[in-house]
Image (cartoon, rainbow over all chains, first blue to last red):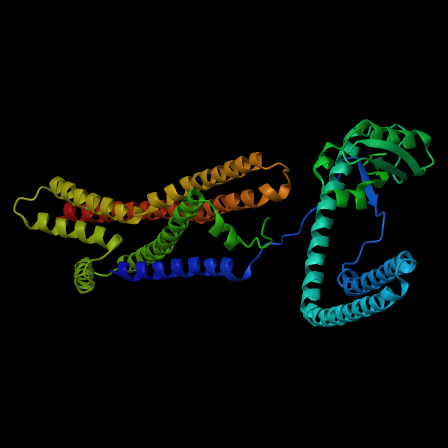
Length: 248
Length: 229
């Protein structure tokens, strides 16, 4: 009877539903991809930034100036050398060489002049060219910096985690205490020194924090790290300890 | 390293072949089960409405012969009929035929009529139950299929994790997320099917029991008639 009609209605409804779903997935609906930082279980160890971040901008510019300085220095050295030569040969054949030396000097001067002009032109051309290159480099540098920052963050998280694992809570630990310690590391990740920068006021808590850092002994994960990054950020690591999640 | 863009669509496209196959199966199952859901909804709704209308007509005191003629006429025009009127027509036709034969024994007449109605009833029951088994299997199996896809996907992403030196959450998370889509799709296919199956099974049962009740009532009316002769 109406079965054909009901089937076609049903097929249409089903197709519409599923196509709608596909369109929804394809076009609009992205899930939020925020990254969640893992909270350590009992303690939060915050790293204090050691040095102001280097900006990537100024890197590109100094090169032409440097070239100029080099040029000047080179010229000075040449002059000096010429002077020395002159003094050496002064006794032997002063007059004959006087002319020759003058010629040589002139020649050298001329060459240097030419060289400088060429350099200047080169620098000019480079500057125009580098309008783009500079921006590109800046962008690249920013990306690199971000990448560095991300790496550093992941290492920081590792350090936090390891410290939290090795920390044993003294009975006197209370919420709101905070101790700032400085951990000195070598590139193998070994802890070579721990000093307390700011005490929490409770010596047992301070000691426990210090002990935690000493107990870690070696952050083996830091071994594979880029040496430059290590020097910049992890030679000395400042960590702020404050107990969290305590039921006291 | 890993793309930032983790839209669900890109996860599906980048999934491994097996997971994609699983997702495809589930998608098709979901589409077909929705066809069934809508079609069954229309059909069962029509059957319930048809039963109510027929009962109204039947108990309105109309002459059974003319009701029979009307219904047969309508069935001829529509090219077949569904529902309770089939039971009525089968019973009434058989009854008339048996009564018109010579030396009709009342017991034999009732027996034949009842048999004809039983046959019609079981046919109607069959019609009501079409595609409910399919919904039941989609409801029960598709979560497992989805789970299979998920387990496979997670297995692969963990195998990948074993290869890398530095294992971070970011190396496994996309794989797991991708794998979990399979479970989501399994549930997406299963939940409507479960709901529809339960609802329709209940509807079919209630329709069937009202058909049977009607058949009994009709049989008792005919019984009275045949013994009054």
